[in-house]
Image 1 (cartoon, rainbow, N blue to C red):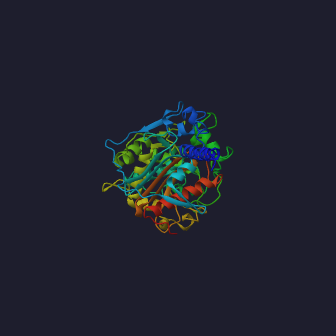
Image 2: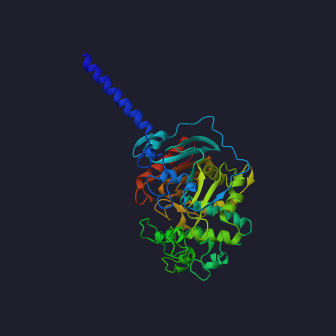
Image 3: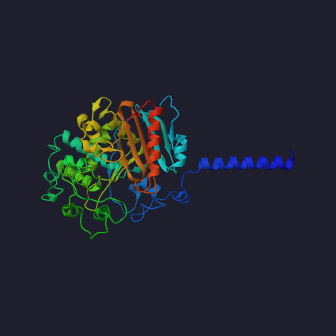
Length: 421
């Protein structure tokens, strides 16, 4: 072989190696998401947009102009030890096998944590994030609100889940939402019409303006009192509506006389041994946005998932009511219309938890743009994924959701869980 040709081949191989190394270090759409700017935190007017998403969604409490209320960390954090042996995590998607590293290179995950029986199997921080980042939940917050409802019920602040909302929220007495039972709100089955398409023209957009401004568009209470149109009788049909969790938030504060930050600290963060302070964003009227704005660290999301997967126990202490958790997360306990593949084409819906179509009780907390906590109690597997997906809803961009589900199933298979349907 001539020397010039040999040198050309060597150069080509070196270029390939360099390209592979560069790709390994790169993260999906990192420039769009603000890498060259240091992943900046935005302002009250732009924190939701690129290139501020990564910076703002992992530090919402530092965004100027947003009002948040803090949840103090536990006096003693509960350890999450690293597993002595960490099996390789693989998954299959579109007839191709992938590794956990592949997922991180393919999807916009800002953080990923995998627990098995309370031990860390894998922990990754991306896009310059670190352990103390506080990740925006979006609708995972709905499940946190449901947990607090269960705790309030157990402690006698709420007499019955069949009580109407207006018993605890006097400001909506006599309205359609005021007459809706807590149980129907938990299942998002009020029957009241609320469109949520994330297109800026739906009821959700008007709801956001009532909560976040600009002022002059009415208050959150005005919005609740104005609802009158029904698509179904109450309790018969699941139709996703963020507004229903807002009513639950107001029930909590009305029933207990405390704000949600105080309740979260007392009933969840302290007993589960949270490592970091967390935060609730507030609406213009001072109410915590229990429907979509809780902010917590990756490990504390993991601790919360572990608490739920352990049926409400921490170190043998019953922190959350077991029967309520089963009612919230067990497909077998749901009415037919709320079971997996009945409530939606794929999932069922419990008390603000998504129920997956598996024989083994498996469920999730989900938020737009890829926020996720998966739990399978019998296998001891909890997976937390925080993300910065471009689109809000999987109905607009299904591919990230499909691969996330494939990863979850791969984690279960890799760690001895069950995926049988």
